[in-house]
Length: 107
Image (cartoon, rainbow, N blue to C red; front, top):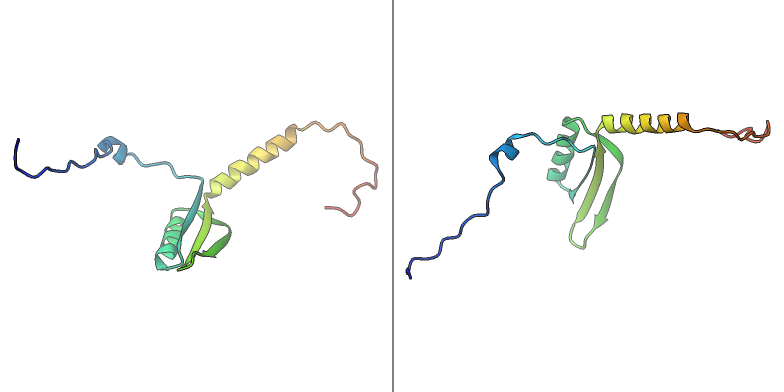
């Protein structure tokens, strides 16, 4: 038995090939963190990558600091979802007849 100190072996790193392949962008991301410059930089980076803001930001207080959240989405995700909804509506088969004035004044 050796008196030499034990050496820690680092955990296995992911395969180099997996690191070299760019990851597909997520259609939706929720970015959270303390309300500071770093959070704003993360949002700005997402916007520079082509994301757009989705909804209003949210904020809460954890007893020590304000924590904020902002959803961002890719515009292509919106277009894909809108197209899917339009296709589904087009495929609906309405056999119901409504009285002429039933929906007057409603959008």
